Image 1 (cartoon, rainbow, N blue to C red):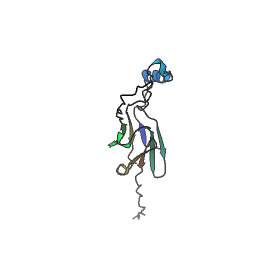
Image 2 (cartoon, rainbow, N blue to C red):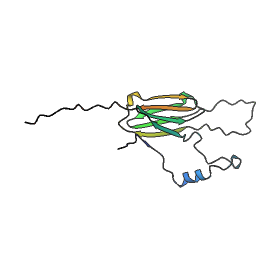
Image 3 (cartoon, helix red, strand yellow):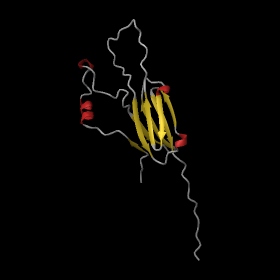
Image 4 (spheres, rainbow, N blue to C red):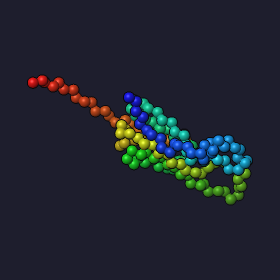
Length: 147
């Protein structure tokens, strides 16, 4: 029986979310786009190996100090905030498409994850989180004598 280690939270789309997706391609010249997930909802790749699970969160333009990765019971939460950089008073923005928004993603993990050994690193715009599997305890076999 195949079991999934993770349940993605906050994945349901309401009518508002579907409309935002529909109008996502409106050019910026028409005003602010409806896309809220420039940093608001980064894409995540999840893979499994023999030793554990791996989450890759695409979040370019951040520093590792911008992230908070927290495990509360079985809820793994990944969040980030980017502070606004100081502006040069001698320059004027002609167009500004970079967003300074943060994001928050949460995942429910199962009991097969070794929570004490979860690791994370940020490199080349990707936050990589390793979720190692617990060592499976082998059941000792024992022959029972019939009396």
